[in-house]
Length: 68
Image (cartoon, one colour):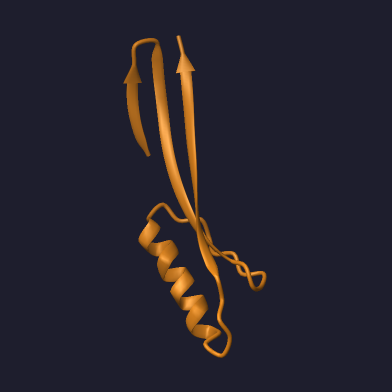
């Protein structure tokens, strides 16, 4: 998590990533490293080589601010 000092307070910024398949119920765990989410997607795709699977990588960004 990255922290940035602002003029009027402090903000924290976080990103996390997750692989989600459109063809079934697969949802990978939330990952802080996007490469890990891509690895989850590739592992899922390899398990289902007989049918094409569309897998999206979802990124969630959270910004929290503490105002003084």
